[in-house]
Length: 254
Image (cartoon, rainbow, N blue to C red; front, side):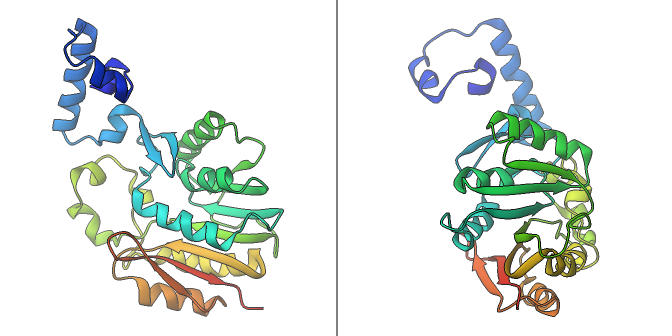
């Protein structure tokens, strides 16, 4: 109803006895019909809250989820504000949620938001403009870290696709039918993108630089091995609010 009437939360409470204009009634009915058809709520209203930021979302990129805030919190712990300047790459940036969250909390950091999907980068560009962070968040259309020179980054954060291909058809319709498959499918075991990223990250970050990646349930052991084989360690496992290992964080061994 707030979306249909363009009301704030306070207005909704204050106007509960007000009649609704016909255009508002029609807009509300359309939203209800869309939700009944299992379209994601975030797509219907066009926005989502992530780490204190309101972001524009759409079918071109994965909807930012609360679990991914665990990745942002872990990155902030590894990139203290006192270290400046910082150069951080958000690989597979989607709508730009992680890059913008980091840039908003690290005022001296330059963040490279990398994706190979033009529709995702369009959403990210809209969100960068929305938060006036054009000077510190640079959008990069590319394949992971292929375009980055050696030893030029202080860190890499990544929420890459990690759902095993065989599990995608069993996901809820909101995800399976309305989110980009390329942002979900991680190969036979869900770790194919990470296996490509890890050696690229080891090349792009400076000695002692950090890599932080989001993982799926049950992937902690195998993903830790991927990072260790690339030269990162020791690998720290960080749990989300449900107690599931959600983020792996490690530094590049000198």
